[in-house]
Length: 305
Ligand code: GDP
Image (cartoon, rainbow, N blue to C red; front, side, top):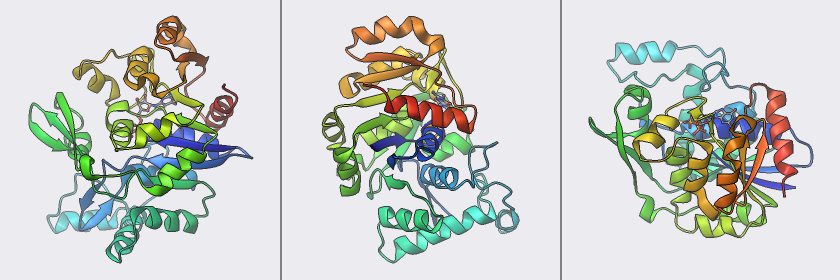
């Protein structure tokens, strides 16, 4: 069974972990790179790293980012040099960014760099950056335009969001590996990630929607449960941008891109509205509290359709 899963750094990543635990699943995780950044001369890919670390069992699961039990000697030294330290990089994490940057500087694509790092960490699943081209999400706020990580980390998601722009998207393309993974997929899943800043930039890549629509079973999992995000700014962002903050509101954003929309059982009353959009609602326990929950939800998605 070939599964292509689109993911950002938190919800989608947990689901990727779930699929990776299943036998007989060949998993390709298509990952957002529009919130990448350059820091200390290094190329940092927060969403790719979240997937890499999670699948390798290295993630700091309390925080949801970085390597568990990492040390911060380099961080303290950056501070002494007066370098920006608003984005915390642990020592082990730094090795990831340095290795990626070295590979990129030698002309290796982000796709190949990621593949070689995933192989070195012993991963079976494929981690595919959505694009090898540079595109960057810019959050338009009352404080002016902010690069995504500046908004997210430096400004702690405090400024009111007025709009979102993805610089470079018109010239960016999905990679051939991404298109091939989608074309070959028996099941395409849009993970429970932020629809605006994690999934949105991937869907905005020219040709991405057409490729997805070629897969008969296209299942999305709602990142909004009971009108709230479990983590991060998704709910507030949806509200500020004029979307209904509910599983039905997110279903409307994806529209006919999906054949099935998984909502948490607590949102059962939304099912008729989702069905009326031409998308089949599926009620499941969509909260992944434990590793077992992740594998259970992934297994249930395979059974849909
Ligand atoms: P980011 O890159 O760290 O912002 O993370 P994502 O975009 O991947 O995910 C953020 C979304 O994941 C939020 O809307 C959360 O509600 C959602 N999320 C996190 N954990 C879960 C979960 O266990 N189940 C579901 N359905 N959504 C989740």
